[in-house]
Amino acid sequence: MKNFKAKHIMVLIAMCGVIGAVLGLVTNVAGLFFEPVATEFGIGKGEVSMTLTICNLCFALGGMLTPKLVKEKSFRMVLIICMAILAGSTALLSTAGNITLMYVFSALRGLSAGTIGMVFVTTVINHWFNKNTALMTSIAMGFSGIASAVLSPILSSIIQSSGWRVGYLVAAIMTVIFVLPSILLPIGLTPEAAGTEAYGEKTVQNVSETKTEAPKVTLSLFLLAAVSAVIAAYMTSMPQHFPGLVSSLSMNTAIGASMLSACMLANTGGKIVLGTMIDRFGTKISLTIYGVLVAIGIVCTWLIHTPLAMNIGAILFGLGYGMAAVGTAIMTRDIFTDANYGNVYPKISLCTTVANAIGSSLIGFLFDMSGSYTSTLLMMLVMMGLYLFILQVMYKKKLS
Image 1: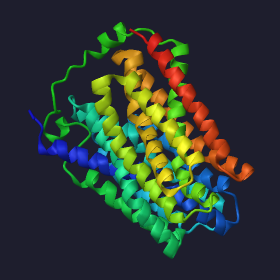
Image 2: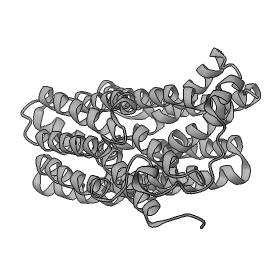
Image 3: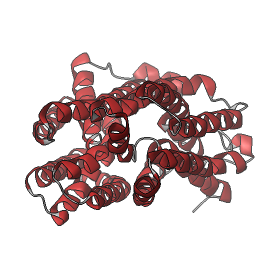
Image 4: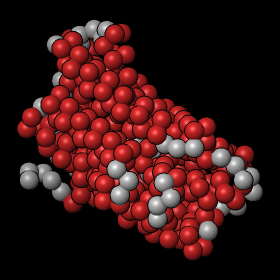
């Protein structure tokens, strides 16, 4: 491939590591800790899942700070500081004697993870890749699923054998290992600073011209896009509760861990497959197919309580991560045009982060009130139907 150099590979490896830490180790395996923490403190799962809600809300705040904090000169220093805070706050969770302290440490964890999270990674990739940007983004985002799939059974085993406090200590060590490549490798925010050039020819028009020619974004279309993105993000809240779902059905706890691993593998593969499908069939058709498959996954976990069906449901649930990350980004570009993408996507991304943050706690509290996950799964099935309807409407009303 023309002008594809070793440093481009280094950038991709580094960003995979960062995403593996800030998503794979912070959010995607959080559900493994809910039940043991709730049991030790004698509180409900809703209260414990609030740790993830607080973490995700602060994650969103960190993402908004990224453009102001991350510059070429501060690139490595921001990574070092955020890695230290992220690993340190994760380790401190193991020492918490009450849920209030866990909320404080979770806030620090989320803020540091968000600062070097999705906004940071996509910004770096956009600087380094003018060609195949979506593919590179999908690979980096997909690594969160690989990390989670591999680490979920490991952490689950550690929690069962040594307790959740040791589990947090191991997660802290893994965080450092994952982020270190981005600090040690000779890369930077831009390829120019690293003495090389971006992969592929730059085709983006002059910014001033783009802004002048940008069609006006209508409020109704933005709200439709925001609602669809929120629904897609809400689907990704459920996998954190797979261990609790399995426990509520009096099934073997190992099934919950295997479901989470299966889901995270689908998270990774699903993003890459979705990108390929979009290139071949278009965004609307591809997201419609994914939406139907996620709906089937909801039905499987709701009605068919066998290990095979539950794992199939988990795999189909995992496709929701592709819808929320890759699908939402590409859909935003489709609906609002390239000219408006830079202005609209950060707002849509904020909506998805908040939805995921609220979703985890909402599911926990619904379980505490009803004693089962039936109401949650029914609500998700209705929401997925709404998502599919909104998707069709948006593509009829999209800007041109």
